[in-house]
Length: 503
Ligand code: AHR
Image 1: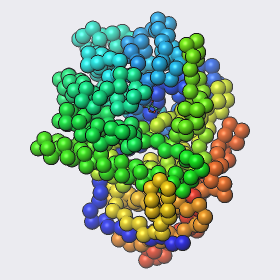
Image 2 (image 1 turned 180 degrees about the horizontal axis):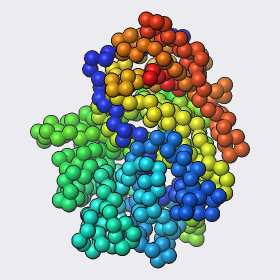
Image 3 (image 1 turned 90 degrees about the horizontal axis):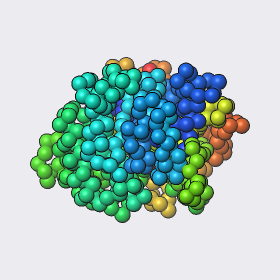
Image 4 (image 1 turned 90 degrees about the vertical axis):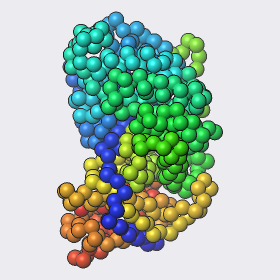
């Protein structure tokens, strides 16, 4: 089949915010311990951080990293994680039925972030704790000197403040699984009170209020309306979370997951703007899509989940999904959705980063390797610069059980007038056939050296593993042809993700 892209460069959708390429490290499974941190490993630095993992995180191109949870944060006492390591208490983690040693805490994580070159995005516990503890953490983190908490931080070896800009007001408070889960009304009041108090300390903080844990929550839509009615002028972002998985062998629906993300974003934008109108506010609230990925959650619920009052392991193997080529195509497509709404999605976090539903895997004492999903993220982070260009996709359609009729091809384009870089990110969701994609770049002013890279495989279920860590990798797409007048054609294999870029 064939597909065609048509650009309108006159009205860019919005500037691509680097924060869209954020990620997430939760104290969960082997994300921190035996993940980023493994003191006995041959590649560990003098702080115990694996330098091979640091190199991969840098290559992935991650902007801000959300920390320390996730569900974990709703039972977390931040004070446990600072001060001399030998005096830190070991605690139960009720969210993941594990034991938290607190060997890595705020100072260690911030120091690791400086090494990887990413920004810290902190979540406060509004599940089992409240406004006071959030204020204490804020003062400890961000006040230069002169109070007990600021001096305590300095005494713990960090005289300069961490200066954390982005703060999440709790995590997934709409979810019945969340410790301290509340109604929209109760959470909205608590979030407003906490936001106001944090802003009394520093009005320039960027605050994220909890939206829905998925667009399929029974409270979705109403939750956003009520929570924003309480908090609208005191926050900058409302969060969205979404995870996708192939269910019952329905690959066609799974490959169209971005259709769901598109409508999720559109609904939340409408709700934000509804509340703005009702309030007559000039303030703009945007979306922080601060958990998104493919996650085989069904497998976790049925196989991995830990139970038992005497069973609280340290850093168990949890949520260690091995990602297929099809998963990577979906991840690439979800990035296309996020970029398409660059006007309103101004922050996002791939959940998560290492070992736990992650693009990077490690073996204790062994290698670190890239999952299939690493590639679309790294390439999009590197090549999506400037602004999102209006892009119309003309393509065949197919039927899905989950989302009805959907296009076979989906794409987004970014253009950076400063560097002249143009990038077209595109997926072919067909399981049967390749598609010939064509477009004309003469209007973009990008005539010349184009290149194309494609991720695909004869087996859409191929994965990278400890035994075969380089089984799947993106390849140059040699079918790319560009005429002197700017007519581009390229073959997109079945179940594939491609970036075509001009520098
Ligand atoms: O990322 C894994 C979990 O998914 C997070 O802890 C939680 O916020 C979400 O339900």
